[in-house]
Length: 308
Image (cartoon, rainbow, N blue to C red):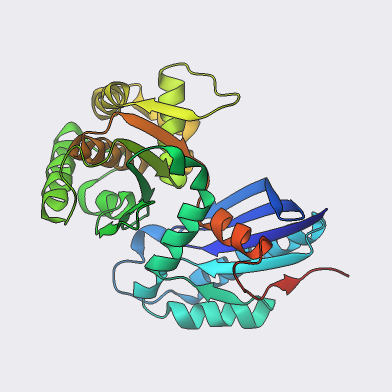
């Protein structure tokens, strides 16, 4: 048995996955995610300040140290496709790589799609399934029949453009719904009924489920995490209008306080657009898919050796 790990640089956080490997079998052990304090401003066409770059470096070095303490033998690193649109990010990733010894592989949309499908291949048994990845600024839709689409809308950018304080007001939520519907209408998406099942993945999907489980008093100990569309719609109304919504969010998704309500509205509107009522939440994403491919010898990627 050995341990491997992967660091993922995205537009809103730096995250770490540590897994144990026996032969070609991989089992996740540790998930750690540190939000970037400047995440909400990086789409404003500006370069990161020196302080912001140092913050990213410090997070990276702390994850390397954690991996070393946990007995990881090889540490890999990837950068999300959406980082390519941020000014000066390539130079920053090169600087982090030079300082830490990591080799940071930049992923494109196709590589991310393949990795997410590999991570969630157990859902291939479900008929006509769409895999939904809620990125900070883009909504990516995949299927196991080589369907791939990208919608230029995400919880972070919605919050930036439409939320004046922390949680959207009813009027702001109405504007958010209208914007989502217009964007989905303009996107090249299949008609209602094309998909029968939906698998929601990513940190936002997990945050939505945390709110959902708390609100409906569900206990998840094992098995699949399931969401019912009618209950999701009820949760949306609560998050938009109820005075108790702040405590629910603070308890279950504090680091996504400003983005989780837009994410929930986005999920509800997308599922309504497709007419999907069978909804599964997956905690497996791009990191798991990339690491699984490396472990199984299907992907060549240079890692940082932490042995010795």
